[in-house]
Length: 201
Image (tube, rainbow, N blue to C red; front, top):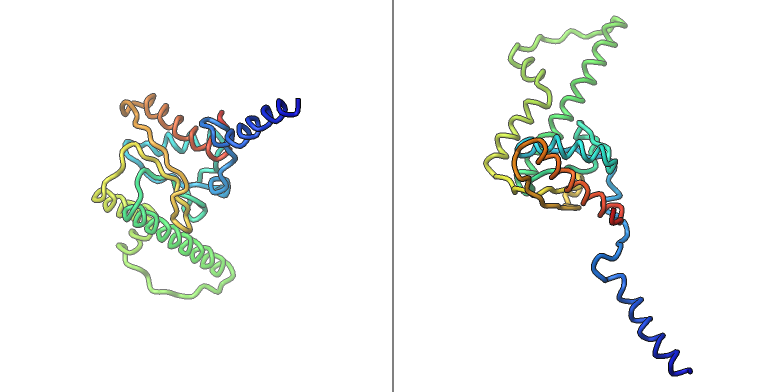
C-alpha cells in the first residue's frame, strides 16, 4: 500500500511542477505593462493610430492622451532613430507651447493689475510660427520619419522615460478599409490586454 501511494505521489508532484510551463497555462499580469497608466498614440501608416486609440480606450487598457507630456508610454508602428526624433520633437513642441501659454496667462494677469511691461512687438512671421504650436514640430517630425521607413504590421508600446520596448504585436490588415483596420486593431489591442492582465480572455 505504501509503495502504491508513493508511485501515485511522485508523478503528481512532477505534473504540478510542469503545469506552469505548459503551453496555454495562465500567466500572471505583466508588471511592466501594469505600470503604464497613460499612452500617446503616434501617427501610423494608413491612419491606423485612430483605430488603435479607439480600441485602447474601448477596452479600458490605458487612458489615451493627446498631450505627450502626460504620457507614460507611446504606441507606435516604428522604433529606432525615427522614433527618437519623433518623440523628442513632440515633447519639445509640447513644452514650448506650455511655456508660451504660461507666459500669455501671466501677461494677461499683469495687464489686469496694470503692471504689464512693454515689450517689442514680434514680427508677423515669428508670431505665425509660434501660433503653429506643436503642429509645426509634428510636421517636421513626420517628414523625417518617412526617410527611415516603417515596420509593416508591427505595433510597439515604448516606455517614455527609458524608451524601453515593453510590448510588441504583429498583425497585417487585409486591406485599408475601415472594417479591416478596425478588426486588426481590435486583435492587437486584445493581445496587449491579455498580456497586461495575465488572462486568456
